[in-house]
Length: 184
Image (cartoon, rainbow, N blue to C red; front, side):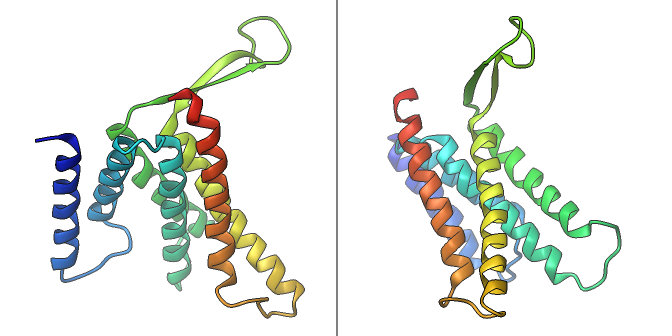
């Protein structure tokens, strides 16, 4: 069986399980597994793991924000932030282990070789993209709130928050895809 057929088969099984489930939970092992399958499939199709990571990170952060805002009672200080961080870690870390590719970031600015500003740093590509996606999701939320406040509590256009966030994610994905095109 070819790799494309395996990916299709795995995707079909995950979709079938999702469709036959009685309850839908916003953050569950099935969702994390589906993201992992999507990451592997997208990688097999030639999409860089860091680009897939952008959407994985956005999913994790938006799920954490949704859950944090749904809870009416506050049990701990910074509860929503803790939920977002937990959601990010519980989503990205398992997916990261499925696609173990690294990105190397040379920071050769000044200082002696080996100092903090004169060394080559590396990190997993999935984590790199996920951090970008998570930051852009929060940035899209703040941009939406800023524009809404500026317009006396009204949005400028329907689905403003969604369009701003998804637009930022797509724009960053295109930029990162073009930047990573030569490194694959």
